[in-house]
View: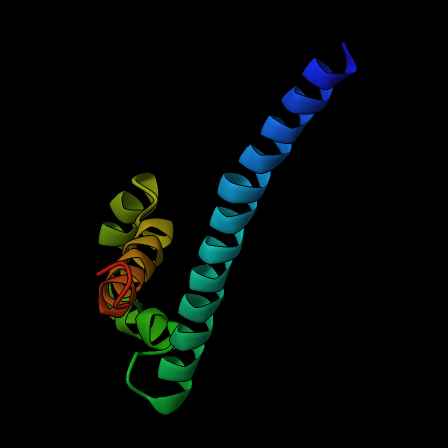
Length: 97
């Protein structure tokens, strides 16, 4: 009886150790490298800073801002730009790209 329980626990432990922990460590390392690499690119001046986007949108008239706020473009543009930057960086990682 205890041999069956011990075998089941051993199988569960092997599954957790092989798949869950190894995948978590791998993806955490990739996430950490990606986020830190973006910070390095921004500080080096390769990628634009977030305030540059605000100054670019500062010249839009109020009549156009009504529709932009209606569609929540002020939130969507930074999301799209960060997604493009992340996609660019992830494609440069040799393991994934």
